[in-house]
Image (cartoon, rainbow, N blue to C red; front, side):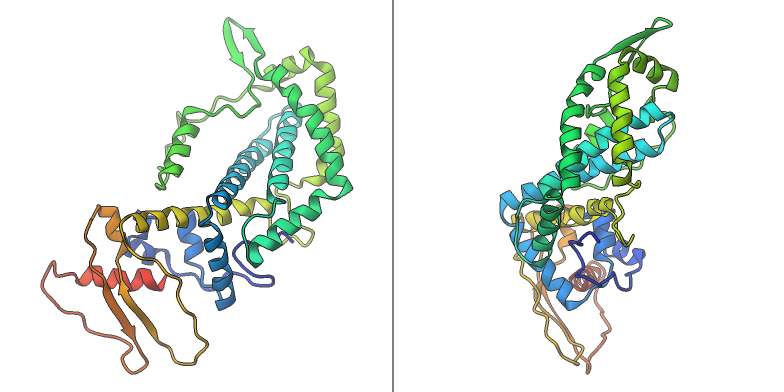
Length: 341
């Protein structure tokens, strides 16, 4: 079972906060949807404290860079997984599979590096360090390292068919849409759902791929052999032995931490203090915050955010909030809600 970066062993997400709550709190103005999804899942005290250790580690620019590289790797794996599932012929699957496994090797080697502290980071690096030390991984890496560079012979091969030029590019050259998505992610913005018609990448037909294979018969024979030898290593989503988690899930987990760190940077830049909540084992249901800020006002470019205190106890579990229009009632309610989430 792949070790989660969000939940301790034998733990699973708890009850979900309804999506409309985060919409009402305007958290969608500050966080991407995948980060909101993780934040909306209730978790236990120990999981929360373990996440605190990860966030403290991410104050180190080197650790954050490490997480960013892993997130980029697993995002590419997700894209290649989609290409593999939609491949139109065996030779296309051979090429995509080699590219995918090369990316998997890079992800594993990066993940094996000891970066960060705490139970989540330690378990994560130890798992992949052990995996990279196995003979089967060594065989996979050796074969992928040998064959992947030969892709350059195909990447710039141009065929002329019926007067049109087609470029075969199994490499990582980004499309303009992919570049825009990358910049959107860097800015911490929610990606716009583009209409599918008219934006789909033009795929190569099996005829063109097979024609290219005839130009490079020995290479494509090696690609086919590679997929035959290592197909059991990949069952569409790198499922672990017990089938509970997939490697591709790390995209959401890593994305959660990186998105929250971007938000924290924005909050700090606005001069708003941050701290970690104190969790106390008690039967008393009390929610107490001093100088709480409505950070969603940052999405409106508000420069002077006024803090307020929050105190809910068993004796006073709810209140009637009154005041003039524009007096800050909604802002205060959002402050309470965001602090609770």
